[in-house]
Length: 225
Image 1 (cartoon, rainbow, N blue to C red):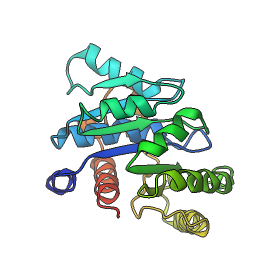
Image 2 (cartoon, helix red, strand yellow):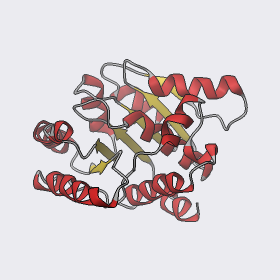
Image 3 (cartoon, rainbow, N blue to C red):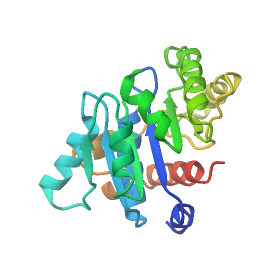
Image 4 (cartoon, helix red, strand yellow):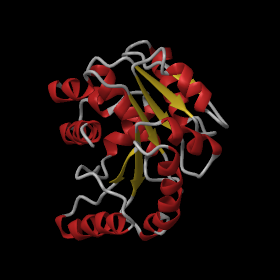
């Protein structure tokens, strides 16, 4: 946690998770990153801009259970730039789950963000969206030139024989000038198990490797320049 606390110090982070396709775990990452930063002492707000409201429902369930640290959370749709501007006056850090589709919420969030994180599974149907995502990112960078953009490969196969698929996915991302994080997530039951009970992999306590994955993502993303 010390490395995360150091990376958080002195800066405000507005982290947007989005993309062109559902399924690679945007909400899962948003939720786990929110808890990771909260446990590191961050003053954080989780905004759910996905009509499915997966992250909002997850955070609401946490509060209802009353056993876990509360994650302040809100819903927002449409042009959310004014909402982000207002909330940034009240919270040091904001994580925004924009779901798996190009939307007004995603486009407006990218104009306000410090970081954009784009998850992809190492699967052909996910990687086919890279061209559309690259065009969307170019548009965002034109209005927000300081935006730090990274992709992340998620739900990777754990078999050593499948490592090349991860390498190829990172190379595909880089070929569109979308820099991938070195950190990845692997397919682990704990991600689904934690989400179902309103917790995170840090709090579930059954898979230390998943905890290491989330912490590595947080550190690399926050330290990105």
